[in-house]
Image 1 (cartoon, rainbow, N blue to C red):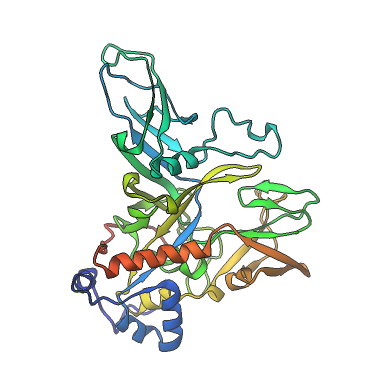
Image 2: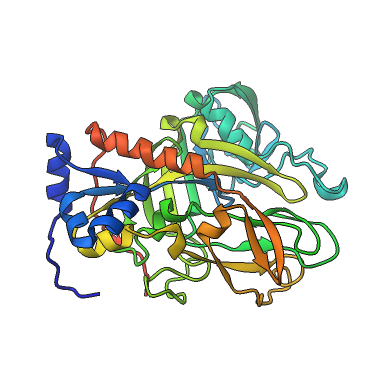
Length: 390
């Protein structure tokens, strides 16, 4: 697209309009309708911020926490929260709890398919709910850290620090999962029936944050976001980030591509937007509510945020044989609006579809962020470093 724009705004100017209560804020679906009706230039002149949202299991999530010191001091080597192992090889009382870590007593898939009823994601949810959880820590003892054990019940407010630190969230696109084999398969995309008996997908479509800024024009290091019902920040590209995927004419990736690494203070978050997840036969996870405000700096950003469900092409992948063996799947793509209708056609067969991402909750995230901005409680930030996108 041309670098010469009719509309020119800055984030500072938009923030001033927010302070004055004059900023025009639309959620991503509202912006799609406006761009289709009025065009990108009129939409850019009228709208200042577009809010996006997603609520979906995000396995690469976790809690960085510090239990604080009390006499006698300790250098923990093993830590458990409600029986879920944490990684303690950081510093004296720093540990990290992964969302997918199961309870130490979980039979896993020894009793197949495993139920995975409690894990790291559930601990995080319980902490945000204000529940008291059981802390157990062991140490080998040193001259400066002589204590060798701690065991007590604590709440989130008794943790010195509790930081939601997620290495990979908010995938820019993701697979529609099917199973061509003759056997039911249990996957992180949910149970997949044999002989393409169902198709599961995970994206919020036109509401999804990274579909609304496909080239990361406004999202980067330091971007302030809605995270888990509280305030978070983007701290860079996430793991498995793919900067240069094949794209449509609108710039939308045709495969799983961009990701974000994010963080926020867990003590300011809400359990409605952070929920432990049990995926039968696979494991535990954490459903995360994440929303990003997109400043409409020019008509290019209006065009990007005008993306519609019908523009988004989701790749279809066979999780029965192709995916576990690292092989490409030859089933092409399906539009997101077709997935939302509840059935798609694959090899002449009508296949029911099921979302892992909650569209209702994704819209709620976008609307809640919109309300924060309208009330002057949330201001935009300039990205300090771009995320690679080409």
